[in-house]
Image (cartoon, rainbow, N blue to C red; front, side, top):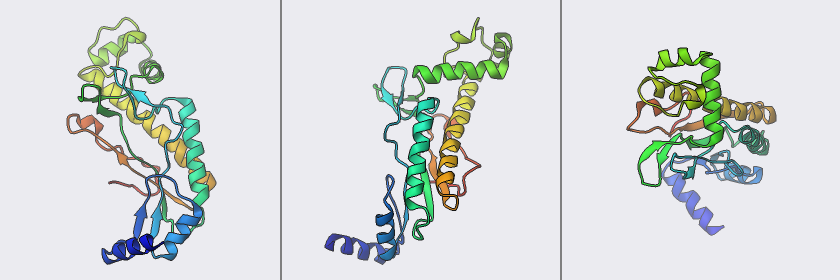
Length: 219
């Protein structure tokens, strides 16, 4: 208790009146913080979410294309939102923090995630819905594939744009599913997100704006 009192005093001296957690919080903790003079911004956790991975087999991140992940994410969002619904000192709930589709592989090289079979198969199905034929796909990407199954992400040149667009759309749908679940549990609670982490070597991975959010967040 004494440590918390000291921390609270130091934070107030620094003119800080809002605390952001690295995961969900409880109603009691949020209310206690508000009584001490602090707002709380909790973050939806990632417990139970299946990872994606790099081409070298290293698993990391979250598989946005996995339907079971979407369902689990909805459960996490609904639970986190319900816990703080109506708490005066909780102005907003974050759907997550710096999700990314790039990272360092086993060799320490920055490169793309998304090489799990679920994501790759979802990408090929997305290409089929988008182009309808391999001929149109090859014409658009400057490639010479015989079937959609031969298309390997992320590709090069114009083909890489298709991969980038697929990841953007898949991530957006994943986050919107969580947003809607949180809103069902707490309709009046503002929902935001602490940005998609990009990469300096690839401008295609810059922040993805999620237009459905109540508040556009950033770090």
